[in-house]
Image 1 (tube, rainbow, N blue to C red):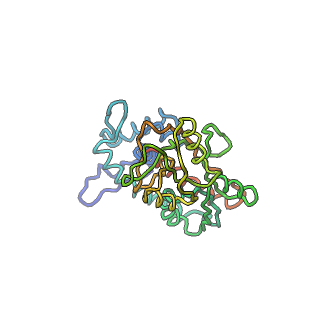
Image 2: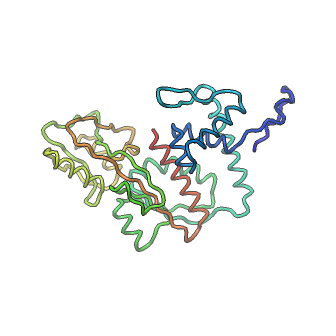
Image 3: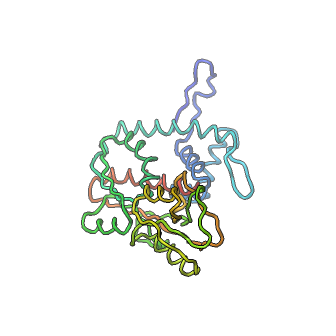
Length: 301
């Protein structure tokens, strides 16, 4: 619990007022994930439990934090202000516990991650994670999921993020689904007579899905460029060599999602995180929490 102390200009009415940091953290999660149900999934609570925490917070503050918009509850002006104030407060809370932790989190972690997620996901977590756990060293391997899984069999990663076409696969410790979408460049409209492709090498889940979709749709297609790195794929698309397929949450800002009814729907893919806890257990769990939270946020936007 947090005790809010009065300043010299405040009366004593605020001296004993307390905010539940647990309720505040739940509120922040609801705002970031844009939904009570999504927040409940990440926090491991039911939607009614999340709603009750928000209600208690509103009662403490004497104001509504959300307003109804259609069938959804969206954060209002007061809620947005509370969110801005809550972020540094929760961060300070976490830093205090980290500073006084009896056992510092340390170790060398091996992380396997597909290249498109390394580009979009890692920058958003690496700085914050390093600030909180400076004694943890990350060794990152970026490649196709098939290649990562093969390496994992001989020299297991501590954490392994992979892509699978089966969204019901229960082999991983944490699974989210995302839409597989067509991606291209606004500067280079695609040829209506043929679908020119920029793809990763054989073994790529995206490549397999899009080729099957195009064949079943009876669309003529041609692979113009093959490269496993997302940076190379993006550069080729920008040069007008073709289009590709990516998970919606990993589409770079300089590329565009193609809305074209003549192209086949590619369905969903599973984003799976597998965690090994045979060594550096505390560090592994902390990094897993960071990755899960950031994935959930990315998929909510």
